[in-house]
Length: 139
Image (cartoon, rainbow, N blue to C red; front, top):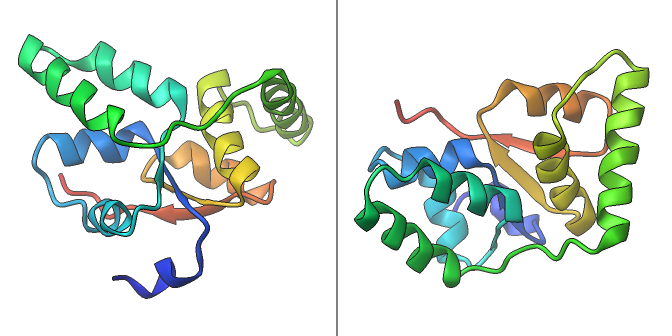
């Protein structure tokens, strides 16, 4: 297990990391988090993965995988915090999409680490309490 994982309450995993993992590319941090039962799925990541499945069997494999993992609850107050995060970032000159703000807010809600290699989350982390772990690119 990676040393950074000893102190975390959970690991929210962004779509970019799942894409590498599902394509069979190295994803050691995700594999460690899965082995430790730390992975948390933002609902939008489920939708992004399903919508990106090119074949029925890929879709079925994704559905089987995500059914085994906890999905972050997103009541109304979560979406209010997503809007507040976007508004706060915009006031600092950082524009992010609602889906990216949602993924970041899932991690913030849980005091969890966000695992991603998307640059947008570096900008979000710079102006928020988001704790980001950059996944090694398996490409």
